[in-house]
Length: 160
Figure (cartoon, one colour):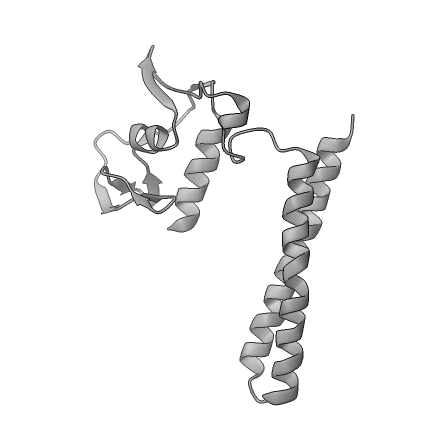
């Protein structure tokens, strides 16, 4: 569920100041398979999301306005605009800089020694807890992979 919300927020962020139009199969006449609440940054929206044919549909106006966007309907298109200054926009919306990536990388790197220590302590004190050890090892690998991805993204934006 969280991935759907994050995906919707990222998708909305990418389309800022761009008319939203795409070739989408019409859901008109299709049955709604389910509804669920939408929580954005800890705030539950008044409108519910719907599931049609296994795809979640978020209430664009509710999500957009909660993110501080102007939402309008023009020429059969939903239009999202962010009229805030670049400094006032959250990092999710504004273009990331090399410094933003450096900060994210530093945060992840600070967590690695903690995880390594937890693995070391579990192996020394509770070697029988192989499932927990494997979970921490997987988390360590996940952090290393995330760092590598962030470094790659930083390198891509740093190239002229």
